[in-house]
Image (tube, rainbow, N blue to C red; front, side, top):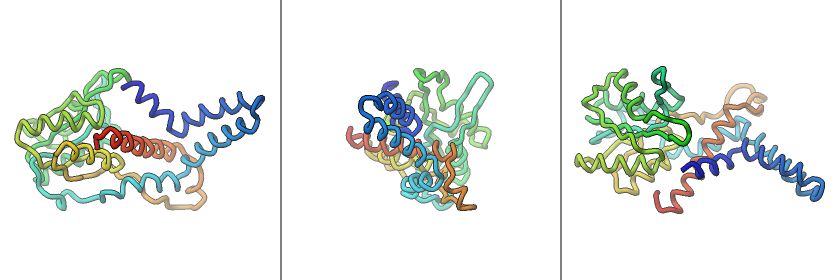
Length: 252
């Protein structure tokens, strides 16, 4: 698990740049042309995916796979499955992350009568320093949004999208549930949906947390690098790599 996380980090623009540029500088004495190429590629790759226009375009290729829908437009199901990644717990309480839209949208679906049960799927990655499973933290937030505890089912063991699907499938089958509304970030939905459906779950996409709007405003600002674009590009690349790995392994 930890090794896969480290290898994934190496494809991101910033870590790859920090790897290639020092390598290029070290090689410049003996192989000057190769050294220069590595430096140029590393810096160019970092610059490209720090720009709002390319970053947004990359993200939209994933987010537009399943369009955004209002809760009233989605069909009824037996349960709503909300994947972790947006809420965590620490010694001070609940910490809402950018992807907390997932829990918020799950609450809206429940209150709109789309399903009578909400399954919250999310454990913790102890090797990365997370000591609190995410599902209970999500449940606290969901309760604050008006969903009763009696309508919640918690899955607190999963650490990956694959495990989200595996452990959720067991809980759903035990209750005779097959048709679910799957809630996760739009960027993550293609991989998550394919993984759940691979296990035979009749999952209906209910994406939220859309981020990849076409850049607007001054044309110059759309072509100036920023950290938000770099972060979004990195997460989109992670999803593409994840889909490739899952398909190779037969998980999606």
